[in-house]
Length: 413
Image (cartoon, rainbow, N blue to C red; front, top):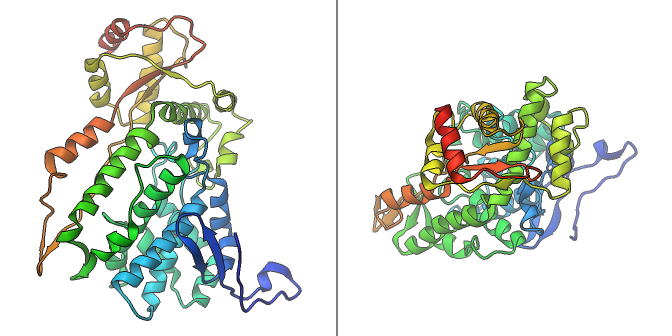
């Protein structure tokens, strides 16, 4: 990494007295990334992201996947800058700068350990991030010095927040859409550090066919194949990386430990809002969570039990499948039914996944995408990815077979 700076003043008094300075950071994907004010990276909300891995436990399968949320945020800023230069060439407006800062700060409210906590926390990380931005006086001051309204930055990030600016919906569409900078960075970045080819996208080619039409981002008809590639790439990354069975096992073990700690009154949801991965994995005051963390450190993951297709389908759609507390109760009841100790099983069901499809610009008319990746195909892809599993403690000597598991589940229905 190399840095270039200007207008630096190191007066006595330390960091608080420094003036705004630009800095160039070198990224393995996007090359030089020029950050207009490097002080923002040192604020508490951004510094926290250095200690949250982008893909959490994925390194148990892909050891190179140890990049951080901060790396990703810098990448999203770089891609957002390219997007803006492509669709709105010319001098940046105050609102454009707010969008770029929203891209840089979009994950400041993210949970630790990738999405292990997503189903356990009621509030969305975008809402937590918007609150964190507005609550940090130092960060707000830096934004205001750049002639950026922190409120507009928060509104662009948190789509549920009431819009006080007329331009808010436009920039929300830039940051969170079918071809947004977030997706274009994480697919490329996660593929790069995982060492797989599935997520690689030609961002420059995509932007050649992306246009702003009636305040909406649409794809020229000639860019149809690039759009389809993104959809399929997302599918492949979920299939082989994000939802790899061993990655799901590690994630489910952390969820189990956290739920156990919350049930015992050792943790609350609010405790986890500001956590980093280190905070999560060093909860020594929670005996159960510490036990699961020790197993992860030793690479002793729970193992996936063989299930019949009918059993797997039933587990995916049964009542309470999307409720972590309902799954928590069911897995202990299933363990008892199978004659196993409490805590020996984990019932894992991934959350539903969506594939966003933008509209196409055909001549001067905007039309719905009508290619093969729509309707039943998209539904089949989404359905095929969501595989319910039962994981078992590897210390159990005799694993139950498909028939015993099916009979036990039927007895609990």
